[in-house]
Image 1 (cartoon, helix red, strand yellow):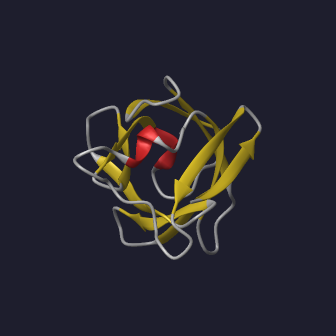
Image 2 (tube, rainbow, N blue to C red; image 1 turned 90 degrees about the horizontal axis):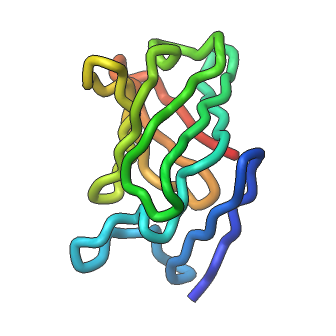
Length: 123
């Protein structure tokens, strides 16, 4: 079993998976049981300034609140909630509309915004 530690500005987290595997939901469990989302993450998109997103929730939570810094790309300045289900991280606005979805990529999350722009979340 390989364990990677993700350390960030608001806390740390651990991610566990086999050396040649990506994290997966096993037996109905969410990746969020192993990967703590809490803390500050940096959202990046091509040709746009990056911004910080602060995720809050208990260490093993699979959903919680998001507080964006100013100047976020796309509509991520409207981010209010996050949800981790079946290996997908979804960032949601105050109306419940998805702003983007991400898949775990080791020490970061890679995904697409609602307008199909490539986006990355990293510590």
